[in-house]
Length: 214
Image 1 (cartoon, rainbow, N blue to C red):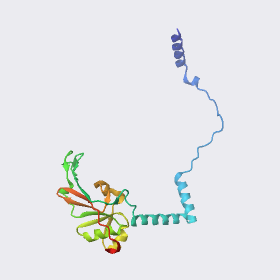
Image 2: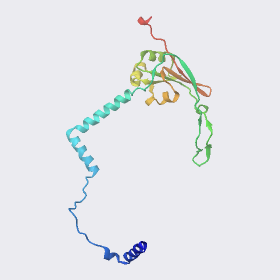
Image 3: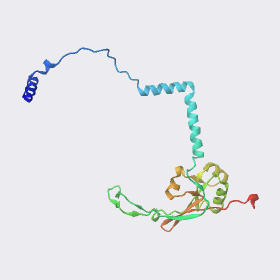
Image 4: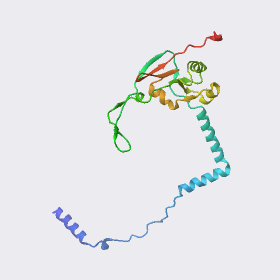
């Protein structure tokens, strides 16, 4: 019986025109327009204020100085220590292609699943020598055993610009430890050289200079 009452009420309600159910409740409380300052205008006003006070010029100069200092002397690679004992291992650079590589016409050049060794097409003609540029012993060791033709000198610490000026030799820097991480180098000096279709990685403990130069 209760179900019939509810159903009858629903039928009656649906039969009443919508206009008869509409009611104007009027305005309840104060109404304010939405006002939001344009973000671009805020930025422009802030820059104008900084420009007028000279703060903008100072900020630009400080940014340029920090950038220059970072370029001349990048942050040292974390986790790299001086080699206390020599060790070496073989690194296989072979990779497995995860998806088909196609040319401009859509033809498959290298199929997915193919194993590719980069050394087959681009051999490592120069050794990669990693060293601490702030360690005079390592710098002297590298300079005495390599030339610009057979090796690239890569710093994990120090200023490549200062060393280039002092040694008249090009120096590089392992930014963010990309190469040392890839090859598992944890101590310097270290040398990477090609050994057949693989790479030989060596960390070398160099003799310490004797006191008095003896």
